[in-house]
Amino acid sequence: MVPVDSRVPSAATAGYADDSTTIAGVSFASVLAVQNADDVKQIDEKDSDDAILAKNQKLGLTFALLEGGAWQFAKQMLDRFPEFYAVNASRSIALSIADLLERSTDDFYQEKSRFALGDTGTFNLSSSLAQTHSLEI
Image 1 (cartoon, rainbow, N blue to C red):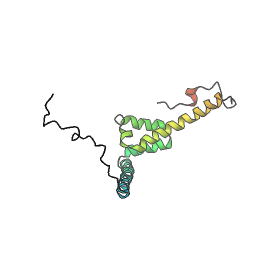
Image 2 (cartoon, one colour):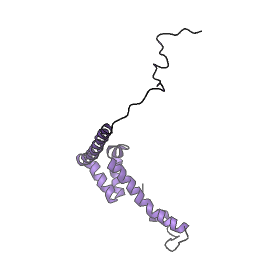
Image 3 (spheres, rainbow, N blue to C red):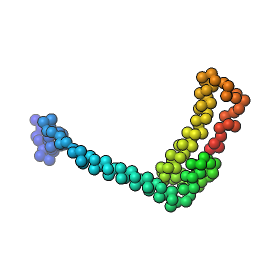
Image 4 (cartoon, rainbow, N blue to C red):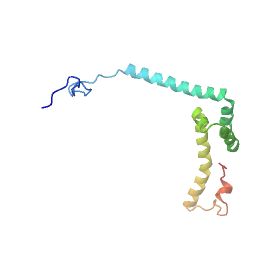
């Protein structure tokens, strides 16, 4: 038989919950207070993103170019930043890039899905993808 060392806690004192113990409930008021605190943090994050775009003119200009769809000029600005700086500094810039990608691929998707369904009236086989859908990334 192995002797029990007093320095080693037993299973009951090591953090294992006893099945007969009850878990205390959380009041609605405390949950509401935590939720309200999280809501304030989210509002502050939006304000801080707007403040970042207002303080950093290069980021603000990049955001405006992306919102306007001027990818070539926005890419020139993005290339001047350290890698991934703009999308890490501003959530709005990251979302604008995602929206621009969605808009640029949507026309292509609609064209190809119509062709796959047999509606070839609007599809021109002589047009190439590079000519009609070029972002020049």
